[in-house]
Image 1 (cartoon, rainbow, N blue to C red):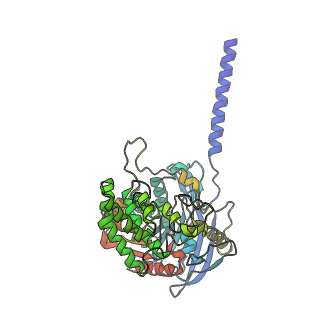
Image 2: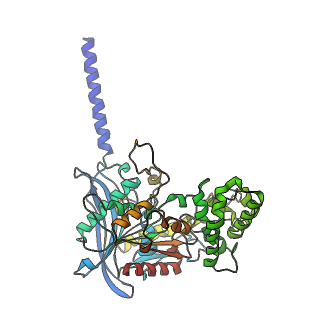
Image 3: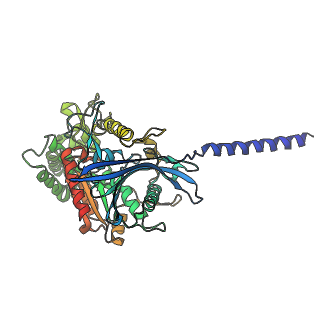
Length: 503
């Protein structure tokens, strides 16, 4: 009897454990509610033309191989009304970067029909509300329809049903999901014959290249007409300021020089362009050989290089010598205006922040070119959604999500494969895609004061990797990472994109 009792008890416990596991699995399945959609009609003046357009703010469900919804992608599309031949009307898909950023920045700062007005010369931060929204007369709706995409985990986009974040939070996984969304949107809106473009910013340029590559496969080859890469980040060697990364010492130097020029710490009496060109030549001809020689340099040679670096980046020669002729960007941010007790921005070196700890090795409050802008953008988008687009959702719009970056899978090879070159580099993919798609062209927009994705890295990256130079247009702006926050650059960037689309 004792043995039988024990067997019954074990069986009951086994059934209970299975029940708990099933319940746990059920609880982990996120409810799939009907997709929400908010449609409104508008009219505006763009490029000197009056355009009637429809705004479609909606959720689109991505499904797995079993036709089960696994993710909801939030997008806002602006499409011109009254057209009969959609094959002549381009469509441009727009997203920001991160990973973990929604499309808010390009939506409310550059491409959207309304944008938030900020101090264009970075003399003060956005403070607190109220903020000013204005009609964006530089928007491109006279030339192209626009679709703003929020990747999974940002904005209102999220995993649903049996979806898991690891299926979307990775370089390849993210590209596959965005490519799937684009195919769904093109099919639903009958736009397979329309010219197609992608506009991405920062990591969004990494994503843009990866998506362009992903669109070539999947059983539905979709060729793009062009990529608009704002503050490109294709080869992370050139945009990662860390010790022993020789490439980054070179690629960041001209941006440091430009920023020092802006703050009147270097290059006075010369134009920005002339001073930057002088720094380029120093980086190519003198600094690069010196970096590779390292400790083989004599004391006299080290002094000569330090003097020249001080001339370009406005720091004391002794500090540069103590830095072993290699000043990391976070230290430059803290040192350039140390005499004023200010730290400069990383996204945009024009911005300045007053920090309590003036002897810290790097800024400790964060990036002033981020925290002095983000509240205005967040308020502007939420107001615009509610008032103009009549969006009414049951959850907050995540302008950024740190959890995405913390869990991001950067590997591009299967788990278990021993070797993968590091860091991330999709530039070779771009070169290969351009050679397969001989009609695809690329516009690369860079800000002189961008201390995240330096403009010299654009030149370094696009001079190699098999990229076709004849189909690449490089443009430069006297702003930073989000150069459109500087109104003269918003105007110039819009004009440059218009020219690019019209070619």
